[in-house]
Amino acid sequence: MSLLVTGSIGIDTIETPFGKRDDVIGGSAIYFSYAASFFTPVRLVGAVGDDCPQNLFKVLEGRDIDLSGLERRKGSKTFRWHGSYVKDMNEAVTLKVDLNVLAEQAPKIPQPFLDSKYVFLANTHPVLQQEMAGNLKGAKLIVADTMNLWIQTEQKELKKLLGQIHGLVLNDGEARLLTEKKNLIAAAKDVLKMGPKFVVIKKGEHGCLLCSANDTFVLPAFPAEQVVDPTGAGDSFAGGMMGYLSTQGIFSSATIKRALAFGTVVASYTIADFSLAGLQSATREAIDDRWQQYKAAMSF
Amino acid sequence: MSLLVTGSIGIDTIETPFGKRDDVIGGSAIYFSYAASFFTPVRLVGAVGDDCPQNLFKVLEGRDIDLSGLERRKGSKTFRWHGSYVKDMNEAVTLKVDLNVLAEQAPKIPQPFLDSKYVFLANTHPVLQQEMAGNLKGAKLIVADTMNLWIQTEQKELKKLLGQIHGLVLNDGEARLLTEKKNLIAAAKDVLKMGPKFVVIKKGEHGCLLCSANDTFVLPAFPAEQVVDPTGAGDSFAGGMMGYLSTQGIFSSATIKRALAFGTVVASYTIADFSLAGLQSATREAIDDRWQQYKAAMSF
Figure 1 (cartoon, each protein chain N blue to C red):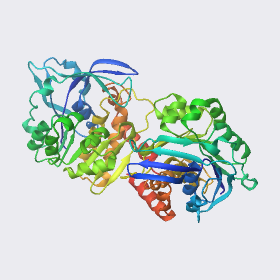
Figure 2: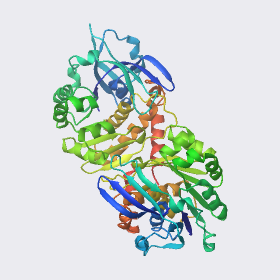
Figure 3: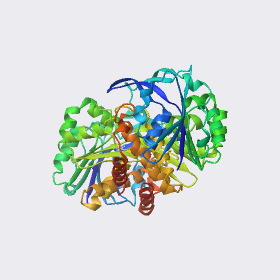
């Protein structure tokens, strides 16, 4: 089924204890799209500047990702992020960020994409997310991500968005910030009261927590002995989750749990190498094998 | 089967965001014994001073815990600990500690206990743990706990102990300190090289990680919306784990996983109230029900 994602497309410079990569492709929509494309065709909506080298998108060649919603804006510059995990692999330190095109108007959703049934609104200004959600009223499932910045500066608009979407994905620090609850289950339950039918809290190396009216459960991360670059892990998780969900059409407790497990497994490929190289090393077959291994590891 | 535990018995004063309790029973051997006694008879070895009020042990009445290895030393004082979780429920701040009897010679293992097949050496000086392990050579399974203090000050003796035991249980911070590895799986694998057949890393609210020659797996904590007092959670976890293992007699991957799940469930009762009140509210039947619930939550 048609899965649309809108979010950032960036040129990243990344430093980790394993080295440094300059000017590699990144951004939430890129990681999400690649991850979801293991499961289903993806429609990408986003914008870059005319400074963006064409070969940056080579990694997406051969993937079932429709780039007709990718705007290349004349006179604009591409979003750039320079981050370091040298001190702590669990939290990036932003050394430099240039919002550039992300600070302009939202990219336009192409007419043929307006019938999308599955939508992921990756992290951006909540007013832009509201606008997107408003344009995709026929969607069966709209899930959004957010970040500290909007929780702190645009909480009113974020809460409006929460009334328009089915699911929210955010990390543990963001959940605590939004709800002022330290306990993550209590925080998740507070988020449910703000509107979404389900909330997924990403806990990095500690896995994820799902909370809905019927369910509360926790899944651990896939055990990884070596994390090379955690950039994009959360977006890859969301991509795997939404990619799988959009092939199912139902949102039973078991389906959602399987989807979270696919997200977990896909993210385990992302963190094993820099930028998209980890995801590029994966195949759907390898993902399915690792998913079975993960499932077996937790049955007793 | 006979399960012996040796460790601390203390008089605790505990402060959490939910209130304060003065002079309540605590100590690793107490939490462990109560937790394990849901599964199997327990032999407790430990020492208190003659200042220890007799009614402190009332909570153990009716439990299948043999107290004939409990020494009441004339002229000695009982171990006391005053801790606070007011700022952070995940890490106790020690406001005051009086080792008292714990700084004296080790308690004697009574003759009838020397045939114990299952042994848990709760945290104490590694030389005392070595002595205990040496006296219990007929044991099928000896598991030990340790703490930061010994890793920092008695690492040579601790490593000697690691050559004498089958399993080590420690928390994430301790594992990182002992191995100088940040990644917990890498840390666990390093611990295995030091001698034990398996290592369990307790991650508090994030569950636990087991590593052996054949297995690496992670289990999440039981989702708890309200943590009232985390004191003794790790010892209760170990008690549930060892209590179950000692009823099985085999140590297959599946058995160990089930044992960790029982430890997880038993600890979820401990943290729900102050001191032993949480464990006192549990029954074996309730533990089995919650275990099934936990198992179901992780199957997909």
